[in-house]
Length: 309
Ligand code: R5P
Image (cartoon, rainbow, N blue to C red):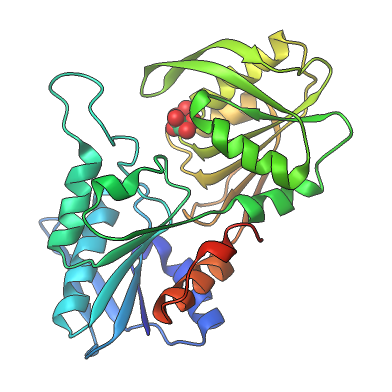
């Protein structure tokens, strides 16, 4: 088993390597003057079962290209099998056409990965659970929900209610509810543009309750900002806690979350970020992903990992 990382997930991969007691594959990643990315592995990977760890968060195109080049390099260095471990998978929201003239972006990414000799992909709480129908390769989905639920436990009070900020998070909120034994409310949301949404209704009892909002990702935080406004209108109390598997936090996200304001945002290290003025808590996916890699390496099922932190 060999672990190789891209620049987006180097820290996470190193934690996994420590857990797995496996040295990382030595590599260089550089930029040519014209902006092309150049990668070079410094060792042969003859017959190796190689895991390339690389999230595809911002700068998305750069990180995606790095992943493709690393996978191709790993294949050409002799790997018997190449698995892309992509904790945060970009383009997952483009899993279908919503208007004439659009591509199926996720399908394009899947084909690029296949063309780069990726045999299998591991993702964490992807936006669409129907990934496998788009990817022409095995897709192993793992989840950060039990880890995030554990981190939330300290912030649960007698009046807490879990909230899905849109219908897409309805199944997700149920998984948190099972682990934390809390009531659930759901917001009906309409997306106006990439960073603007409107909330149509709050379904469930939030009056005088403290909301814990859960989602797969926070991107521009438009969804959260709108959700909190709708919750206030419905009589929820302030002191909102948020848990999301992926803290993409782009555009006006930080300002929006500071303005809301949120009491705490809990995310994972699927994406690395620089210092933030937000009240952020980050839980690591390293142990979970190491378990996944070990199981895949030994051909063992992942099912029993699902429910535990
Ligand atoms: C949407 O369906 C997702 O589950 C998230 O709610 C959404 O992508 C978050 O994006 P933003 O933070 O930009 O509203």
